[in-house]
Amino acid sequence: MQGILIVDKPAGWTSFDVIAKMRGVLGTRKLGHSGTLDPMATGVLPVFCGGASKAVDLQLNHDKTYRATLRLGSRTDTGDITGTVLKTRPVTAGEAELKDILPRFVGPQMQVPPMYSAVKINGQPLYKAARQGLTVERKARPIEIYGITYEGSPAPGEYTLTVRCSKGTYIRTLLEDIAQGMGQLGTMSALRRTQAGLFAEADAHTLEEILAAKEAGPDALEGLLLPVERVFEPLPLLKVSPGVAQHLYNGCPTSRYPAPDGRYRVQDEAGQFLGLANITGGVLRVEKLFVERG
Image (cartoon, one colour):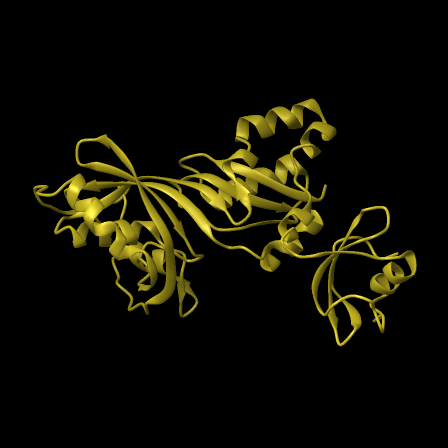
């Protein structure tokens, strides 16, 4: 099987747990995933299967959208309610103060990764040091918040936000910073990823749906997979003749190609996706193939 399975990750599972489960379901160890989610988080987790795993690092869009809930009144060691409460303080601000401060957090900014994260310092994930009670010096990294929308209050002292952001943004840290800007302590009580790059909630399947498809047979399971070409749909399409396709298969350049310079997703005359190619100075060269060489 080759394609992209968008998993609706359940709470309590690590992203690695999902991959381990999918290896058994899909019958291959050749899997990759895009954008790790914390165990408490749910939502869109793209799993790249078979030859499609080559596309993980070639994705054109790494932006994310999250629906997160901020709980005021306490701070934890993990930045969410799964951690140990470090400090509490009476809540003295609410919806009005939150709405007033949100625009301040939109735009490019620097963010320090939390200790409970998979970021590696000197080859070791920060969360391993955190579990030993250690604090490691971290450098702030550039991120961008494209927009924050207030979605209402599901409970007293809790406020739900939709956040559109760049790759590498820690929503836990953002919520703590928002609370601090309100003069409060705060922690994250819920998190769901609703968009990962080009993939949305509507593309996602629960584990129950995936297991039911496996029971129904290979065709049903394969029917859940999105084509790897979906990742590259923003690129212009180039349809090539059989001769040019053979050049691409063999890694041979094609000179004086009649198309503008640039990067393309390539199909053969029958509409089969072949892979990526670049035209530079009128010369067409393969970048990455997603079909067997013929």
